[in-house]
Amino acid sequence: MIKASDKPQIIQLPKFLDKRGNLSFAEQFKQVPFKIERSYWIYDVPGGEDRGGHAYRENEEFIIALSGAFDVVLNDGKQEWTFPLNRSYYGLYVPKGMWREMKNFSTNSFALILASTPYNEDDYIRDFNEFKVEVKA
Ligand code: TYD
Image (cartoon, rainbow, N blue to C red):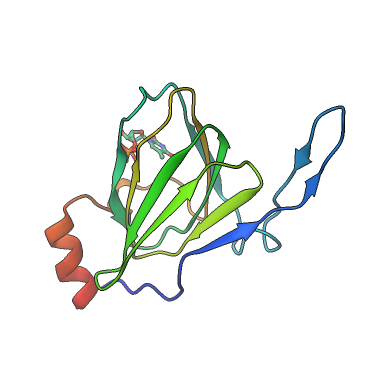
């Protein structure tokens, strides 16, 4: 059984504006509401491409559009949200138990994802109908 305990939300990150170039950061248990066990990134995505049609049973994520733009579409089995990400000083918190898709990548976009668990293929639900059954259980 999976249960989404929290709502997804956009978290504004600290931003140091400087004529030498700007700086932002994120720390675990501060801007990121979990212990960071893993990070991965998605890059060289052809413009307009989609990725990540799946849910995690346990893993939570924090997604930042470091460059470019893309949409994160989330569904908890009842409600759907679309979060357009296009600034490097916003992070999207994705609770566990959410179907999540990443859509409409702009050319040269760069997504950084901080994750709460090590990679585990058994944590994935890759079929939306199976997700709907598990989320209702
Ligand atoms: P996947 O999560 O399926 O990407 P997407 O949902 O965006 O299509 O990951 C693609 C491949 O990368 C998959 O074979 C597993 C591997 N992978 C890891 O080995 N470690 C990781 O942390 C991640 C995210 C993926």
